Length: 123
Image (tube, rainbow, N blue to C red; front, side):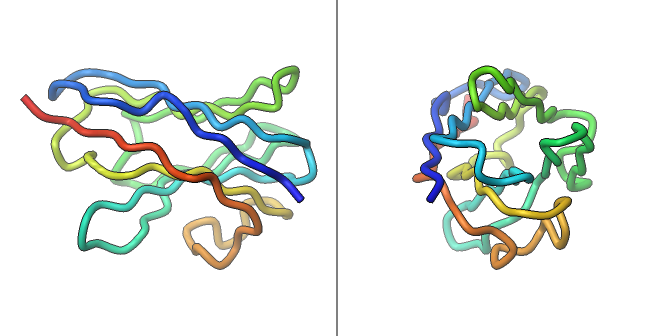
């Protein structure tokens, strides 16, 4: 069992930045994905990191603006978000899985989920 705890959400103006954290209770997984869900929309996979070698995949919607990284010593994965727009407003989730980020965009690929953290981009 892996427990994931997200933090770092909040409100920011357009063009601003936020860093989300996902702290895991144990390294009992090999991939960590990030998802977001806006009201009335499906949960969207925005990226995934393969813990063992730092390979990372991004959705086109966030590529070049969002960066995923990890701190092995802290069992924590980060999502650095910049150049935020109102369209980035959503609840953001991290999720853990085994494998090399296979089918990383699919919700069903992940075993464990965090509780979500709200990000609001508004002027």
